[in-house]
Image 1: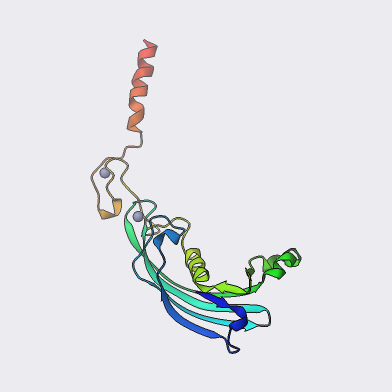
Image 2: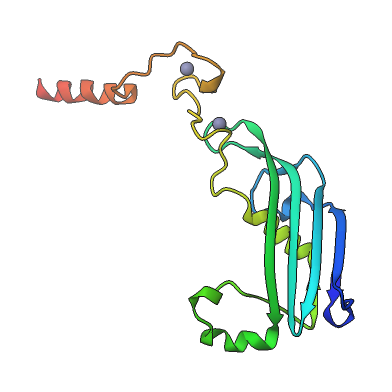
Length: 173
Ligand SMILES: [Zn+2]
Ligand SMILES: [Zn+2]
C-alpha cells in the first residue's frame, strides 16, 4: 500500500483497514498470527514532512523462551512518526541525538504496509515469556513446571558428575 506524497489530499488521509502479513515477515521466529492486523492510520503532509500517526492491533501466538509452550500475545500499540525527504538524510549528521531516530521517505513515496509491519515488530519483547515468572521445564523429566509438580528430586549436586568422583577415587588407590 504505497502513498504518493505529492498526491496526498490537503486535509490528509484517514485509513482504517486490516492487513494480512505472512508470519515469515515477523522478527520473532515461531510467531503466528491468530488475527489479522487491524490498523487505523492518519497521514498528513506538512511542507516536506509527512506525519503518520496510528494504531496497530492484533493477536499473535508466541513460543515461550523458557517452557517452550505457545501463548497468546495481544498487541495494541500506538505510534507517531515523522518522515523527512531522503535529501535530508545527508544532513543527518547535523541533527543532534534527539533526532537520531528520524525516518526518511524515498522517491516521494511511503509504503504504509511496511511502516505498519515495522511498528508491529517493534512491540515484540526481546525474549518472549508466557509469564514473567515462568519457571520453565523440569531439568529431570522435561515437564512444564507451571502445570504442577512432577515429583522429581532436583538435587543440588549434579548427578552427571558422580561417575567422575568414582574415577577420582579409583586413582587414589
Ligand atoms: Zn513459559
Ligand atoms: Zn520432573
